[in-house]
Length: 145
Image 1 (tube, rainbow, N blue to C red):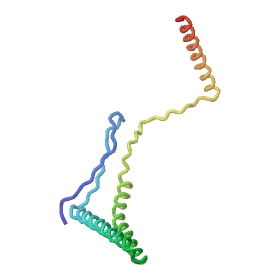
Image 2: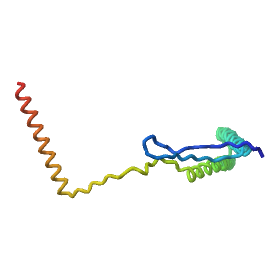
Image 3: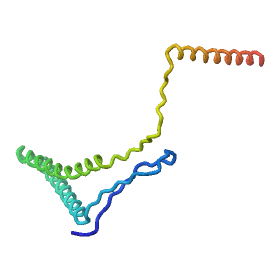
Image 4: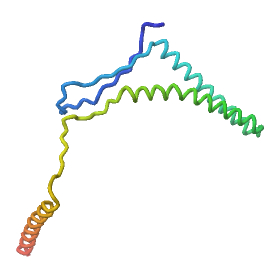
């Protein structure tokens, strides 16, 4: 086994003004030998799938028997699944271990605690201000004629 490892890192989205003194860093590692072995195996499987799909096209073009086509389709699906499994496991591990969403714990939720009557009174007060502004605007337009 090689003593050289691939290290895959990620960091939290530390924001400049979030008043946090720390940023979270996460990493996973894989021995270089193992990562190369996995990558080679996945490339081989994917290449095999491409070859099988080409073979399937030829069989369909030659109007081969349904059993031969079904068997080849099954083999393609099995190979594609064997390639997807390691990729999906890696994605699952990544999702489970590295939840690095930017969440500001200092954010204060603002809740409107006014009663419905207070809200209506506030709307009426603003309506008076709007009506006064419209009245002033109309007066200015009349004066400019």
